[in-house]
Length: 66
Image (tube, rainbow, N blue to C red):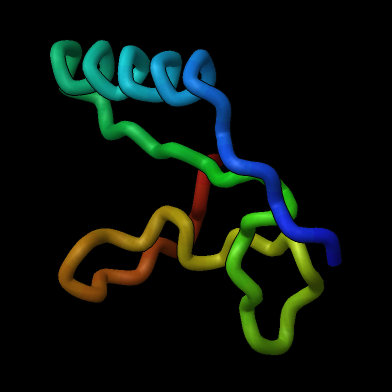
C-alpha cells in the first residue's frame, strides 16, 4: 500500500465545519480517514472499517452505518 497523503487545509476546514454542524444539531459526527490511511483490521481485507462506529468505553457497534 502507498502512504496516504495528508489532508489539505480545505478538507480539514470542511471536516471541522461538518463536525460543528453535527454538534449544533445533536447528530453524532464521524470523520473517515482516506482509504490509504484506514487502519488494518486483523482477519479482514485492507479498507475494512470494522470498529469505526464503536462507542467510547468499549461498547461495540453491531450495525455500522445502516
